[in-house]
Length: 263
Image (tube, rainbow, N blue to C red):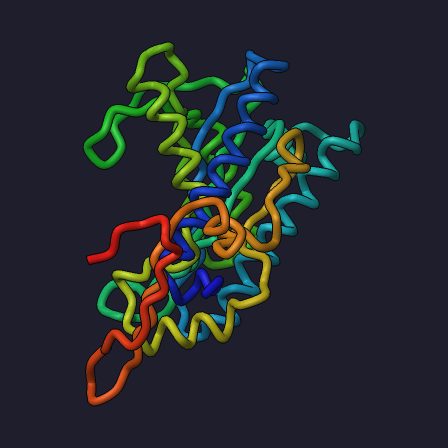
């Protein structure tokens, strides 16, 4: 149906194709700049009832942060203490996610992004939510303060290092982080149908991902869904057509390409 905000299957395919493109770009940048440190950054804003207002709030806040980054990289004469800490981000790809707050209280918008940090950023091993992680504490605290100044309502920022040690588990860590930054805008299993339809009406056609810095230029097509008709021309298939009436789905037509066994 090509409506990823309504359909779990299309959302899954869209996310999978995004992961594939982002993974290629990140590996290409890291191969050229192996000293860069990949991290997963999560940022949020306060819950509110209006989804449209919250979308505009978090996206405009992100735009302001990126402008501060550009200013910091260009304006060498600005005092170091006044320059945006985001200048240490070499490049980033991320997406916005929207869900209902605990107990259904307002919309909870947040972003996940996989970013490549300058090697000068220092990390410390700490425990977060019961997990041992490596965190750039000074960078995280500075980003929290800057995010609060921009949003006016939230300082919630989480930054943690993605392991790049050459083990199967480490490869999973990188892929999991890319998946986190590429997942669907709505958790379809955790949202009421009425809220899902409302979110579709508000968010359709809006930009739900962002890239900047060295990760700019990731080629993600506007239409990330399968061209299923073209795919099926290459394979044998059975086309089943169902009708819905009297509260049930009923098989009304079967088309067999002749290359499959249908019983």
